[in-house]
Image (spheres, helix red, strand yellow):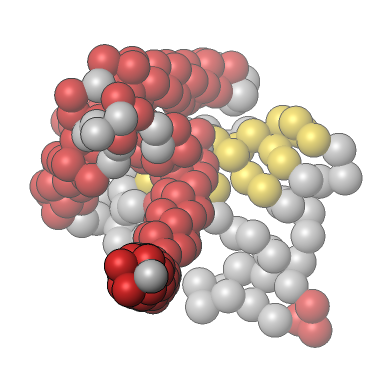
Length: 240
């Protein structure tokens, strides 16, 4: 086995890549959340875990104007507390999401160590992003009881023909999210690309194995024919 083919669990370089992406991603997520809740509203927003858990309707975020990050209403900063998962899915299921996230994090490390190899750089980058995103939102759920969201994409764009989402919002993209959500989705996308590449490579290797016996049968046949010819020549020489 080549050194690049050994499992990532036994590879210091693979662990270094995974942990480096994880740490950088986690710092970026928690840092951006803290900065936004300190600076986007007119006054810093403080989240009290006890108050947020005791009253599901409690919201300490004051009314505030969103801050434009990208022109043409492509991306704004808007403070929101999220009691669910990505894009607010599954509101008020905090314990479930904590348990699910812990399980998913364990599964991520298991997949890294058991099913990836030292040379699978894309999978290590993808798993690092997924783990960083999961840990970032897990920290919020444990520390504050909610997840801090602040990114609003396409805030000034509405659905065509007067359509509305099931919640009544006419916005083209009504959800507010954070850096952890972006890393989770990006990591899953990159992992799917990695799996597709591995499956293609496996298919090519299986095809090569299937083709190998045909060529191996031809070689003995040629060798047998050559041996027969040599025997015939030897017999002719002997008779002469």
